[in-house]
Image (cartoon, rainbow over all chains, first blue to last red; front, top):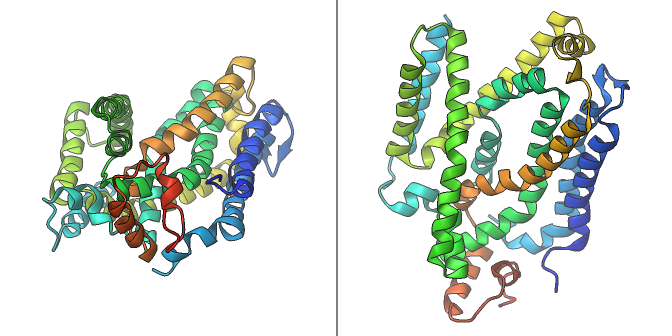
Length: 73
Length: 291
C-alpha cells in the first residue's frame, strides 16, 4: 500500500516541479514581456499562485480525509 | 526618526520575547525546544512564513540579480516556492515521527527511528556546519542594513549587539520567542516588501522601467543567459527545495496534534516493541484503524 495518495503527489508535487523547473528551462532565455515583466519572471510569479492552488487541490480533493481527526481541533 | 523607529521595533521584539515565557516553565527541555507541542495552526503558519524571510530577502536577492543576473533571482524565488510542496508531503511525516520518538530536533528523529547514535551526531554536526555560513551571511547583510541607517557603529559592534539580542530572545523564552516575534516580523516584512515594490515601481514610472533600469546595470538581469547560469538555476532550485524544508523543520515539532494524534501516540507506545518499517505508514492511519 502506498502511503501517499498518488493523485495528490501528481497534483501537489509533480505538477509544480515540472512547471517551475521545466518552465524556467524553456522560457529562461525568452525575450517576451508580459505585464512589464520578462516572461521567465512572470512565469515563476504566476506559479506562486498556481502552486498554492495545486496544494489546496491536493488537500481538499485527496488528503483531507486521512487527517480528519486532526481537523476536529 | 529612523533611529527612533528602529529602537522601538527592537524593544517591542524584546518585550514580545519576554512575554512569550510568561507562565511557562521554559527550563523544561520539551517546553524550551518545542513549546510542549502546543502551537496552533495559525502560529505554525507565522513560523513557517517567518522561515522564508531573512536579511537575504531584502539585501541578498536584489544584490544577487545585479551581481549575477536573472539566474540568481529565479533560483531564489524558485527554490523557496518549491520547498512548500515538498514540505506539504514531508512535514506531516516528520511531525508524526517527532511525536512518536519524543523528538525535538531532526537528529532526534533519526536517532529514534534508526537507533543510531552515529547517525544522530552526524546529522547534528551537518546541520551545525550548514548554519555557520548561513549565520555569517545574515550578519554580513545586517551590517549592510545597519550601515544604511547611518548609526556609525563599527560592523563588529553591530554584529555583537545583534547576536546578543538574538541570544537573549532564545535564553529567556526558548522557541516561544521566535514564534511570537515571527508575527511581528512577518507583518513588518510583508509591509516593507509591498511598500518598497510600489515605491520602486512608481519612482521608475512602471514595472517595465524597473526591469529596464536593472538591465542597464547588468544586461543579464532579464533573462537567464548562458548554459552555466541555466544549469546553476535549475539544479540549485531542485536541491534547495529539499534542503530548505529539511533545515527549517524544527518548528514543525512545535505543532499541536488533534484527537487522532493523542490516540496514535498511545498506540505507538503500546506497540513500541513491534518493528515498524516506516513510521508514517502506521501513524498515517485514521483513528481506530490500529497499526
